[in-house]
Image 1 (cartoon, rainbow, N blue to C red):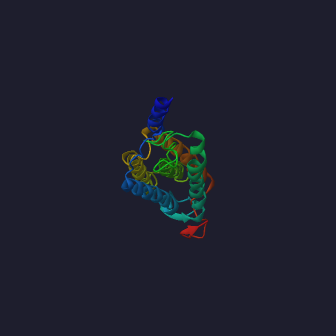
Image 2: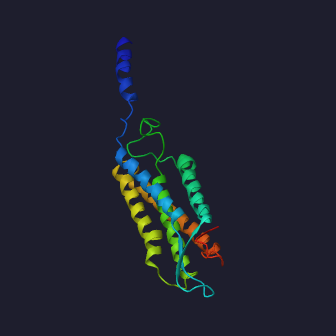
Image 3: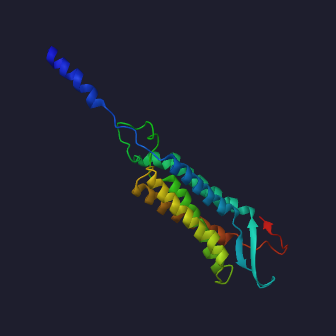
Length: 212
């Protein structure tokens, strides 16, 4: 009996060992948080650029709308819902995390879909939706390079850097990043499209630069 107990005592700690905590690159963690915040700020601050109505002075105009808070807040709520609700339903571990070290250091939360990728790409989708329908519906198909750069190109760069950073920093796997990106850009486009179609870019006949 004594030898058997000795074997159990020696082997039990080894069997109960947990995986070591994974290493994350905090530099990339900070950088990707900044890029997501910048992507959202651009959607809030970017003016609606359109070719003016025939009844008004002909030419390109830019108008800032307070109502842009609506799509930005919608996407913010969706991103938070992904982080604090959907991830806990899917329960897909981050890289380096498993049943033995979750929850634990660097494994407190799950990874899929990536909330950073979701947030950055939802901003891109929103901008693309606003740009496309401001051009096709409100500008008679006229292309404006400034609107494209602000609504699509810069958000696309920020979204790309976010995805690269989340992978390089070992925060999420490729699949988790792709999942967040695809869902984010799809929902973002629907939100941006809806906003552009419902909210006329012109500020009425007041000529104000800022309006609701």
